[in-house]
Amino acid sequence: MKALAMPFRRTGEGDRTSQGVLVLFLLAILLVLSCLISLHVGPTGVGLRDLFAYLTGNGESLTTQERVILEAVRLPRTALGLLIGAGLAVSGAMMQGLFRNPLADPGIVGVTSGAGLAAVCAIVLGGGVLAPVAMLLGSQFLPLMAFFGGLIVTWVLYAIATRDGRTSTTALILCGIAIGALAGALMGLLIVVADDRQLRDITFWSLGSLGGATYGRVLSILPFIAFVMAIIPFVSKGLDALILGDAAAFHMGVPVQRLKRIVIVAVAAACGATVAVAGSIGFVGIVVPHLLRLAMGPSHRFLLPGCALGGGALLLIADAVSRTVAAPMELPIGVVTALFGAPVFLFLLIGKNGIGARDLP
Amino acid sequence: MIIAEKVTVSRSGRKLIDTISIELKPGQFTVVIGPNGAGKSTLMKVLSGEMKPDSGIVSYYGTSVDLCQPADLAKRRAVLPQATQLAFPFTALEIARMGAVAHGALNPSEEARKALSRVGLRGFESRPYPSMSGGEQQRVQFARALAQVPQAVVDGAPRALFLDEPTASLDLGHQISVLETARDFASAGGMVLAILHDLNLAAEFADHLVVLHHGRVVAEGACHETVNDDIIASVYGIAGAVGRVPAAHIPYVLPQSRHR
Image (cartoon, rainbow over all chains, first blue to last red; front, side):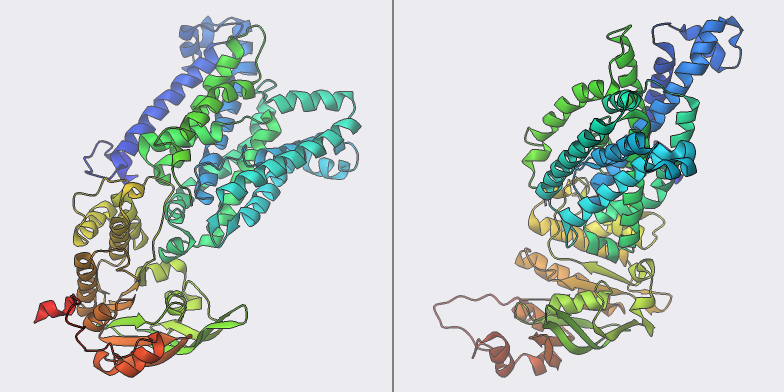
């Protein structure tokens, strides 16, 4: 906080503190702009002047229709996009820190598939075998199931791919492929036994969309995302130290096992919650942290808050694109993030400074 | 004072270190030597609290290391590990800064900068660690350890510096300057434990030399008591090499000779 108080203090060579603060400031502006864009665009445009008037508390100039659209559709959708984007990007960055590997992404290594499988289980079996659990958990049933699905996969991945505190990139990616295939097969089985209504739910959900955003959904994932954001200040120093290895982190006073458990739970919470309400939205968790590392350096004390801001902004912009390019049709947002993210990801792998050019431990 | 009493570590049926007792005293530069697999790194891991011994006790000023929180230990000792590789482009300053943050520095960047200049890396602050040479990386790590224990004694309590092969991948000049920095730390009242492979450097810098072989202490004491033909021959299998000048056609470089 001291750094925030004097944002443009000259801190000198090699110290990217002021750079980090500056980038965070720019990201905050970007986020505000993307919120406005998200509220503004759509089949029924709400004029920017009316929007400002509404947001500042004098919405008399708005028609009833505009007011309904804003309050019932745009606001929950913007809030949901904000939470999901922040959750995806922060959990991606945390996972990359945990595995000491810039390629670890919940989507690529299968955590999203695990959460998705659990969500499909919840949809298909929620009225049958799992009915008592569904009754007990109520509206939190789907997010909690997805959370546990993500948690199990993250734990399994960590156990398989990490030996003596070192994570093998190959083991990690192959493990992700195997888990993805297994989850896909089990989902196929569940789809066979699903009825029509459940099938529709699964299809909507598996494409990834902010479509049916409601305040209910926003509230159901809020605790998960809030938890992940709340732990940022407590894990960032530890994650920095962890980059030097388990032993070095311990030498610098980090309770390594506890930190890892917290981060695994946080990654699963963010993935589970986002998958439960919006399906699988890929690449946000790898593209945002990577671009921000280029802009502000790899230190988690700026990277994690940066991902929260940048992830939210990116997802809102992607959602605005998904609503406008094929209007009145709506593209699934997962399509937009993949169209933008996959090329960026490939670009990161090539070139002499690319991730692929470096010999990863 | 850091004390290990009768510590034993076994892995898959083999005793890596076998009932070793060792004491790190304030103001003393302790050097551990021994052939590969003698248990030097294991002993250091046990002393730094990183590894729990299967039997025996390690204590920091009378408190068992098991009862110390990682954060408390971090304030009392810093560890320089063997070669560390990174997949993320931290700058030299950011690495050293982590050490300063670990001991709760009020201005960690400033302390990191000081530590870097102590290891001769002034001007290297903004260099990305992965692009530095092996020797430079080693010195950045040393700077990180120094930044974690910037003062040898705080409020009457001496700090410790653990160095696992601090001279590996360094040129002769930097080997000496790193060990001189460590000796200054000991002279100021701190405790230093270093693992060295170079017997000449060990003989020059050690106040107290510990010779490990097959997980046991085979000799310890002042260098002139421990570095002799019998011990070197029995531990390394090289006989007749102590204190003798090589054949006339082989040039030799002994760093200790610079003090004559």
